[in-house]
Image 1 (tube, one colour):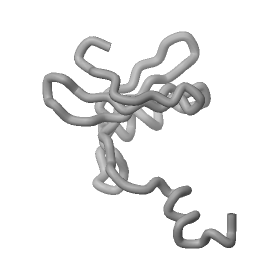
Image 2: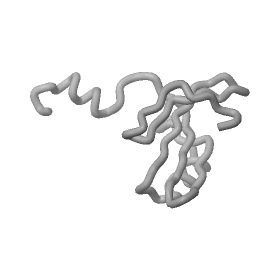
Image 3: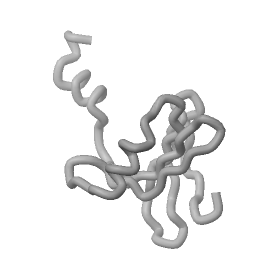
Length: 88
């Protein structure tokens, strides 16, 4: 991974927590089998404060690897389960 250090990985989801060694910041690496690379390239070029910043995206062997900013907190599924446990 060169400039990144692996912190934690979930092989089932294809998502890893990594650290950019040069900048000393946490990032998320996602390995996707189903994707539209154009969407991620657009998001990378047109950052919004409402979504994680896309730092890198690369395609190889039919998979897209995306490196994005780490956002600390609950994901949407966790939030909904916490606020509405009777609906799950």
